[in-house]
Image (tube, rainbow, N blue to C red; front, side):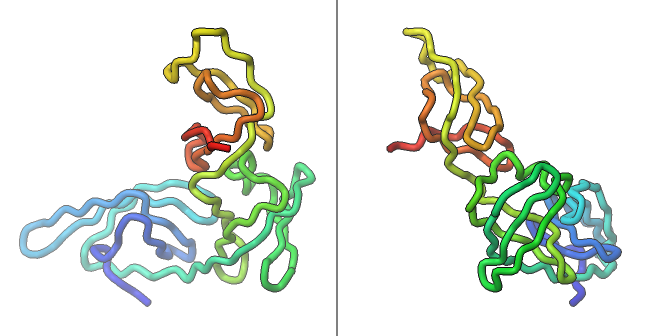
Length: 188
Protein backbone atom coordinates (compact mmCIF):
# COMPACT_ATOMS: atom_id res chain seq x y z
CA UNK A 1 0.00 0.00 0.00
CA UNK A 2 1.35 3.42 -0.95
CA UNK A 3 0.86 6.75 0.80
CA UNK A 4 2.23 10.29 0.61
CA UNK A 5 5.17 11.69 2.61
CA UNK A 6 2.87 14.06 4.51
CA UNK A 7 1.26 10.94 6.05
CA UNK A 8 4.56 9.96 7.69
CA UNK A 9 4.98 10.42 11.43
CA UNK A 10 7.64 9.73 14.04
CA UNK A 11 8.00 6.00 14.74
CA UNK A 12 6.31 4.90 11.51
CA UNK A 13 7.87 2.13 9.40
CA UNK A 14 8.00 2.36 5.60
CA UNK A 15 9.92 0.83 2.72
CA UNK A 16 12.42 2.67 0.51
CA UNK A 17 14.17 0.83 -2.33
CA UNK A 18 13.28 -2.53 -0.75
CA UNK A 19 14.68 -1.64 2.70
CA UNK A 20 12.46 -1.04 5.77
CA UNK A 21 13.09 2.23 7.64
CA UNK A 22 11.68 3.78 10.83
CA UNK A 23 11.08 7.55 11.01
CA UNK A 24 13.00 9.02 13.96
CA UNK A 25 12.49 12.73 13.17
CA UNK A 26 9.86 14.44 11.01
CA UNK A 27 9.55 17.97 9.66
CA UNK A 28 7.30 19.48 7.00
CA UNK A 29 7.74 22.74 5.10
CA UNK A 30 4.72 24.05 3.18
CA UNK A 31 5.66 25.83 -0.03
CA UNK A 32 3.59 28.25 -2.07
CA UNK A 33 0.77 26.99 -4.29
CA UNK A 34 -0.02 23.97 -2.14
CA UNK A 35 3.26 22.09 -2.47
CA UNK A 36 5.24 20.82 0.51
CA UNK A 37 8.58 19.26 1.35
CA UNK A 38 8.95 16.64 4.06
CA UNK A 39 12.34 16.23 5.75
CA UNK A 40 12.82 13.07 7.80
CA UNK A 41 15.62 11.35 9.65
CA UNK A 42 15.21 7.63 9.12
CA UNK A 43 16.89 4.53 10.55
CA UNK A 44 17.34 1.32 8.57
CA UNK A 45 15.81 -1.69 10.31
CA UNK A 46 18.32 -3.90 8.46
CA UNK A 47 21.69 -2.37 9.34
CA UNK A 48 20.86 0.50 11.73
CA UNK A 49 22.15 3.20 9.37
CA UNK A 50 20.63 6.64 9.92
CA UNK A 51 19.88 8.83 6.88
CA UNK A 52 18.43 12.28 6.26
CA UNK A 53 15.86 12.10 3.47
CA UNK A 54 13.77 14.77 1.71
CA UNK A 55 10.49 13.96 -0.03
CA UNK A 56 8.32 16.16 -2.21
CA UNK A 57 4.64 16.17 -1.18
CA UNK A 58 3.65 14.51 -4.46
CA UNK A 59 5.95 11.47 -4.08
CA UNK A 60 4.61 8.04 -3.20
CA UNK A 61 5.96 5.97 -0.29
CA UNK A 62 5.52 2.23 0.09
CA UNK A 63 4.41 0.79 3.44
CA UNK A 64 6.77 -1.87 4.85
CA UNK A 65 5.33 -5.19 5.91
CA UNK A 66 7.27 -5.60 9.17
CA UNK A 67 5.78 -8.02 11.69
CA UNK A 68 6.59 -8.78 15.33
CA UNK A 69 7.17 -12.22 16.79
CA UNK A 70 7.74 -13.24 20.43
CA UNK A 71 11.04 -15.07 20.85
CA UNK A 72 13.25 -16.28 23.68
CA UNK A 73 16.98 -15.59 23.85
CA UNK A 74 18.74 -18.91 24.43
CA UNK A 75 22.50 -18.24 24.49
CA UNK A 76 25.50 -16.80 22.64
CA UNK A 77 28.76 -18.45 21.68
CA UNK A 78 30.42 -15.05 21.19
CA UNK A 79 30.05 -14.95 17.41
CA UNK A 80 26.35 -15.89 17.18
CA UNK A 81 23.19 -15.25 19.23
CA UNK A 82 20.62 -18.06 19.35
CA UNK A 83 16.86 -17.51 19.74
CA UNK A 84 13.71 -19.67 19.74
CA UNK A 85 10.28 -18.78 18.39
CA UNK A 86 7.74 -18.98 21.27
CA UNK A 87 5.00 -20.44 19.05
CA UNK A 88 6.77 -22.85 16.69
CA UNK A 89 9.83 -23.63 18.86
CA UNK A 90 11.98 -23.11 15.76
CA UNK A 91 15.46 -21.84 16.54
CA UNK A 92 17.26 -19.15 14.59
CA UNK A 93 20.49 -17.27 14.96
CA UNK A 94 21.83 -13.80 14.40
CA UNK A 95 25.49 -12.83 14.00
CA UNK A 96 27.02 -10.86 16.89
CA UNK A 97 27.62 -7.95 14.49
CA UNK A 98 23.81 -7.52 14.22
CA UNK A 99 23.44 -7.50 18.01
CA UNK A 100 25.88 -4.75 19.08
CA UNK A 101 23.18 -2.52 20.60
CA UNK A 102 21.21 -5.25 22.36
CA UNK A 103 24.00 -7.61 23.47
CA UNK A 104 24.71 -5.97 26.82
CA UNK A 105 21.10 -6.23 27.94
CA UNK A 106 20.25 -9.85 27.09
CA UNK A 107 20.12 -12.62 29.70
CA UNK A 108 19.60 -16.27 28.86
CA UNK A 109 15.87 -17.00 28.91
CA UNK A 110 14.78 -13.38 28.29
CA UNK A 111 11.73 -12.94 26.08
CA UNK A 112 12.08 -10.26 23.40
CA UNK A 113 10.41 -9.18 20.14
CA UNK A 114 11.88 -10.19 16.77
CA UNK A 115 11.01 -7.93 13.85
CA UNK A 116 10.43 -9.85 10.62
CA UNK A 117 10.68 -8.52 7.05
CA UNK A 118 10.40 -10.69 3.92
CA UNK A 119 10.37 -13.85 6.08
CA UNK A 120 13.61 -13.14 7.92
CA UNK A 121 14.53 -11.61 11.27
CA UNK A 122 15.88 -8.08 10.79
CA UNK A 123 16.02 -6.82 14.37
CA UNK A 124 15.63 -7.81 18.00
CA UNK A 125 13.66 -5.25 19.98
CA UNK A 126 14.14 -5.07 23.73
CA UNK A 127 11.82 -3.58 26.32
CA UNK A 128 12.53 0.13 26.85
CA UNK A 129 13.62 -0.40 30.47
CA UNK A 130 14.90 -3.62 32.00
CA UNK A 131 15.94 -4.59 35.53
CA UNK A 132 19.51 -5.86 35.91
CA UNK A 133 21.46 -6.90 38.99
CA UNK A 134 24.68 -5.10 39.95
CA UNK A 135 27.40 -7.77 40.23
CA UNK A 136 30.27 -5.44 41.13
CA UNK A 137 30.75 -1.83 42.16
CA UNK A 138 33.13 0.00 44.48
CA UNK A 139 31.98 0.65 48.03
CA UNK A 140 31.02 4.24 48.74
CA UNK A 141 32.92 6.45 51.17
CA UNK A 142 30.73 7.42 54.14
CA UNK A 143 29.13 10.82 53.54
CA UNK A 144 29.69 10.55 49.78
CA UNK A 145 26.20 9.31 48.85
CA UNK A 146 24.85 12.25 46.88
CA UNK A 147 22.96 11.19 43.75
CA UNK A 148 25.08 13.69 41.78
CA UNK A 149 28.19 11.56 42.32
CA UNK A 150 28.45 8.56 40.01
CA UNK A 151 30.61 5.47 39.89
CA UNK A 152 31.00 2.53 37.54
CA UNK A 153 29.03 -0.66 38.12
CA UNK A 154 29.20 -4.00 36.34
CA UNK A 155 25.84 -5.63 35.67
CA UNK A 156 24.89 -9.30 35.44
CA UNK A 157 25.14 -9.24 31.64
CA UNK A 158 28.74 -7.99 31.80
CA UNK A 159 28.18 -4.40 30.71
CA UNK A 160 29.45 -1.49 32.77
CA UNK A 161 27.42 1.68 33.31
CA UNK A 162 27.56 4.78 35.51
CA UNK A 163 25.32 4.63 38.59
CA UNK A 164 24.73 6.97 41.57
CA UNK A 165 27.12 6.51 44.50
CA UNK A 166 24.42 4.96 46.75
CA UNK A 167 24.03 1.84 44.53
CA UNK A 168 25.58 -1.26 46.12
CA UNK A 169 26.67 -4.65 44.84
CA UNK A 170 23.59 -6.92 44.79
CA UNK A 171 21.13 -4.08 44.07
CA UNK A 172 18.79 -4.42 41.10
CA UNK A 173 18.53 -1.34 38.91
CA UNK A 174 16.45 -0.30 35.90
CA UNK A 175 18.48 0.50 32.78
CA UNK A 176 17.30 2.32 29.64
CA UNK A 177 18.11 -0.09 26.77
CA UNK A 178 18.18 2.72 24.19
CA UNK A 179 20.87 4.78 25.96
CA UNK A 180 22.44 2.32 28.41
CA UNK A 181 21.82 4.76 31.28
CA UNK A 182 20.77 4.13 34.85
CA UNK A 183 17.10 5.01 35.54
CA UNK A 184 16.37 3.97 39.12
CA UNK A 185 16.96 1.39 41.82
CA UNK A 186 14.33 -1.36 41.91
CA UNK A 187 12.80 -1.72 45.36
CA UNK A 188 13.07 -5.26 46.74
